[in-house]
Image (cartoon, rainbow, N blue to C red; front, side):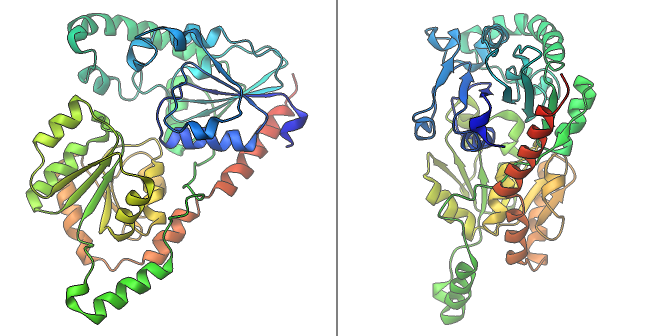
Length: 391
């Protein structure tokens, strides 16, 4: 589809940090270079991707104090997205795990929602969010307000989920949640690894590694460590990786850009083999993955793009065997799936790593099969079919 022939808008819940959902959104921007951008607040950590694009920000963006405090704006975002006018567009594509799917369009405008998951804090992970409040001195008030607010928001969220003409899920896991929570059908288009990075490893790395090991025992590279990577939030269960590696005495490198109460708590329980690395550039993370013994993903992800990034670097993924990991990790070939979200279960999987002769070429090829080209082709196909729908 030629984006110049149609008037298109792209909608994001918020643009404030950099993660898997943001990479997907930037890809949509590249697919539709003339599309206008709509979002509740716009404080990008990677502003270079948004140069020369027309950004429509909601009234929340201009509210002092609230605009940079994500959780405090929960009740305002439905109104923010309702306030946008999409009448002039032929198609609107929302990339959503929260309120962006609730935009209003008229019968002439087709709305495609690429859903990363039904709103986590209302449905699948409501209890986890209730137990981890970040309202500081106002936590006591939040405990009183949140039960009522969540009840109101769940009703709104369900109604909002009936508005898109078509749902595209980022995984079969998300597809099942869309059916369960929203009573909507959807199609699956998997996200992709970041193929544009120059630092993705290749076969030459393994040749150098083997030569160094054969030449001299003292030249052996340190590949005995594991890696964790991502934002520090409770559902990602970094605590499991820390406790398992503490128990086994295994080296673990944690890469994150998050500094909050949870990261401080986890640093306090980290033993001498746990290394915390904040705000590392992509190249440093890449090198760590290239030489790592494995990548630990102890959380249940909706999809888990970070697992693809690890596999593209040849790193086996040790993942909790629920959610998106079951769709990307081939047990015993590209990684290991452990059955319980408990330190002992993860520790057993980590100990099994030495029992398997990993085919790093196969691991890389499997990760690379989730390509941008496939994502683009499948998205175009479904969007074309949406435009062809009878009004």
